[in-house]
Image: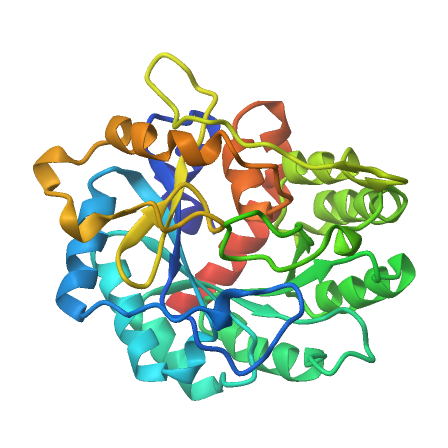
Length: 354
């Protein structure tokens, strides 16, 4: 276990002492999907897909701006619709030094595909499941079955679930308890409303969870994180959720920093989003700002991107996305709360060497 913790020492160091480099990248690999979630507009977009040569160019350019152990999260659309393409993309990202995460709805996953992704260098597999047992998209049984394979081969097994205004706190807690009891991580995401001009969420304000819901769910999650380590969200994100949500006519959201971190200022973003055609932007709602394929490596810098992204970030009404809140909230005493999670991750990763 100590060997596994040591192998991720640079990532841990980057969380304790954040630098003026990218730590987290979201990458829309493609946009097609076999589901039609009410709060997601991604599959409705008709956006091209880069060739492998262009993907390699974009990955290398982004890697040059990144820390020693950055994370890249491959998103869709549903990535398993093109399994060979997915394995190829994981290989490409791992080969240039990213810790690679994949997020899938799970319907197209198989144990064989998971093993191929492991061989390609996959670090973390998140399967998205609705916590409402009556939902048409409720595939928890299959997801937990698939994650038996994930655990056995040393990939972090994660169940993602979205908390909306329709989520019953008791139902959510029962759902999350079942996930944790199987040794999988639970990753909660509060539903964020549609952003004008954005490309990710199509949810209305009415879908955002209420403060009353979150104040029932969040303390339970925080306790489970500290006692089991099987909650991926850091305490900073849980604290953000505890203080946000809908209360009457008031909607309280989180606002990210308008700038990347600099050498003189530790506050700020350390993340961006790549779209499937090479456009990049500050987050998953605003990825289509500039096309990285048209920007020479010699001109690329976070300072340049900061200037390009400024008009977009100034208009942002806020969100509740866990990846960005968590990435920006790194550092400080709250990181002591990550020790149980790190131990769990190291135990699972050690399976990769057995």
